[in-house]
Amino acid sequence: MQRVSPSSFLWVFRREPAFWLVGATLGYLALPLFLFCLSWLQRPWAIGFTLITSLGLWLTFIEFRREAALMVALKSWLQMVTRRGVLSTAMLCFLLVIISGAGGYGYQTGDWTKHEILLKDLVDYPWPVFYDYYGATIGLAYYVAYYLLPALIGKVAGILPANQMLVLWTLAGLILSVFWFALLIRRSLIAGLSFFLLFSGLSVIGALLRFATPVDLLAGTPVINTSPWQTHPALWSSIWQYSPHVRGLFWAPQHVLPGWLITGMMLFVLL
Image (cartoon, rainbow, N blue to C red):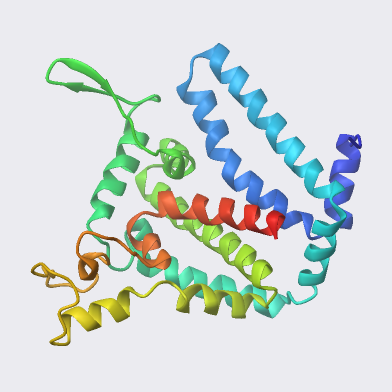
């Protein structure tokens, strides 16, 4: 394996702009892991898992650098990326994040009650978080990675800055996801974002067929909430669920953001 020194590591970023996408994505995925290891685990485990994560990041970066086909594909696609495209994509992604409910802006689906409670507890309680539940000490067991960096900001500055950081953290994950999607289809960022939004599942068609027409595709009585935003995307398909992936941003960003990024990187390497 080719050896890389720290100085050449920085030189690669300056010389090869395409590496910023790889580095930013790996950093986005790894930063919450570092926070978790160093603040939730006992010291021997914290040190061990931090070293393992760091080694994994280093080896992944080296693997990207030494694969010529990956670099050719990255450089070829990078020629389609313009400053105007980056700015337009960032603005459209910001609009999506604002209306998704992150930070308390826009309409919030029912799951945001849980998101806000978790963020508030992560700000108010010492890490790791434990509760006194009817005399028993119970630990918080949930997917906390999405909330850790905003909560860390909140511990220093309060819950309001924590919510603003949650918006920025969500925005960063969405922009990186669109970058990988555009790279996979070898199109511009705007085209990638358009495909990302428009080809997001058939829930709209399924819901219209079941609830807006006399056609009864599946057995069972449909139950629709008064708000279309609260209506679960799986209701049209009875016991099955075919949720559009963009809808995950409104319900479960803690799941979809890392899922999009990891899937994007894996598909890029495989294809």
